Length: 172
Image 1 (tube, one colour):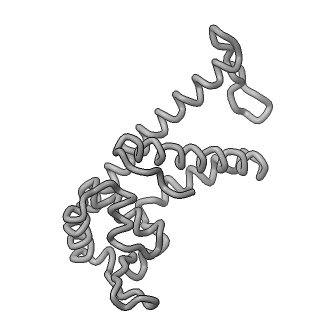
Image 2 (cartoon, one colour):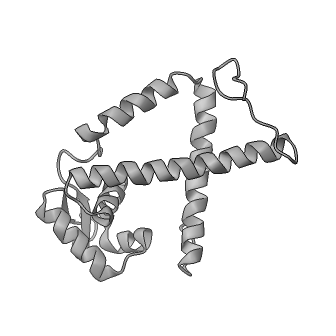
Image 3 (cartoon, helix red, strand yellow):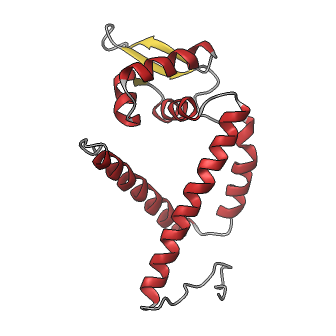
């Protein structure tokens, strides 16, 4: 496989043509990213003494900033009792807290504990450094294209997950 002027591999021609070859590469790259993410997050959760489910729920809370337990049920696919158990464990560890919704005092929201709002813990530094180095090889326009593709791919994966669960897809 030849490299382009920017140092990225040129698309290989597949048996049925160049489009099929690049579509195959995208599919394989997606699978490799998924595998790498599972391994990376598994190691992170292990180092923090968290189970995979607790780690992912913490990530959902950090991404939302503030979210109800019901919304976590919807986003995670877990049962309400399971979410309650996860939130109890994460709260005991000081990783999140439950607070009253200022707009509706009857409602309780979950948010990251102070200091964890942005989700950046020292364990991420190596990955963040490597990703920053990678981004340095691309123009802003190329990164916009990559970001748009990744965002749309994630949205479609969530739709497919909801379909497998027999639920309505998340709102756009």
